[in-house]
Length: 430
Image (cartoon, rainbow, N blue to C red):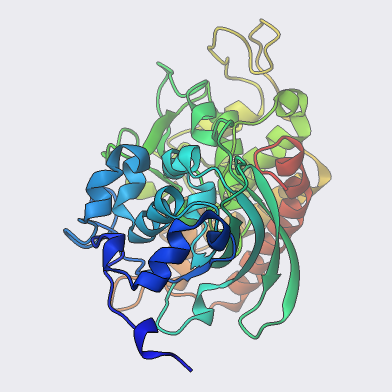
């Protein structure tokens, strides 16, 4: 039962502690009593407006916002960060528990917060956001228990994971990533090239929540300045294929939403099998469209698919057969030479090519087709679009359904071969 003097109104982000009931002030101001103080916090999770994401204008303005602005940096726009910041500086040596997203632990933009909020994270468990009423989205919510009396930089914790029905799923490793370089830092090592572009690749962010935004576009397409993008050419096609595959091949889930893709170790450079598997995956899973201009991504010759006319570009088959010289200061593997490389594919990759070849053949058996069609164009041909302009998920052509199904099955088997190497080469942490 609550006592009358224990119920009070207090604006935590604006009011001075002198407005608290005297009995609570006595606890806060007494070092020994404060050790027994446990603070449970579930503050508003609104964030202020900014150029990058959604928010509410002016919502983060407060006394705490002004007082600790330099400490919080970018994170001052998050109201719950302001709550944690005030507790850290003004109510030291307490046990603190809170619900929140994992941004304060993992997001690169929250490094400023982690640099001063140096307290021990005793325990963390995760549950889907949809566990909470009126919360939408596929991301984890964490329940944190901090001991603010212990100084510790957060680097890693094993979190217990539960589903929305309170069923235990397992353990999830959560990393801070503060002393690591990200996958878009790796891009800087190969993005500059003067060779002819065969397409723009857009690499938004470095985590799973941006997975669906990683895609191809026409050469030199205009994209927002905040997005990582570069031109795909003969000089960086392998690296670009690795990037695209790594970012897309593992499904984004509520649990890996904030996992970060990293600058890899050097192991991939000598693994031709991995390189060619990623090239194969990219060729048969991308969004390249003939509407982008000349289609340089056709992985077959006219003879292989019984095309009715000549292709406009032989770039991809020439590249695969080692007929194109790679113009870089060092060759792809850092050995100091440039030689055309005939691509030798694994059995799983060959199976993808075989399935794709049958699909292309079937498409080219139809009258009046676009001879330079990409996989995306072929899908559009058979599946059509609805009245809203969105491509349909199904087709009435059962032969096509069988062929595209077989291609997807072979891609899935190839994906299972590639995934372990994504962790082996440290694109992701386990």
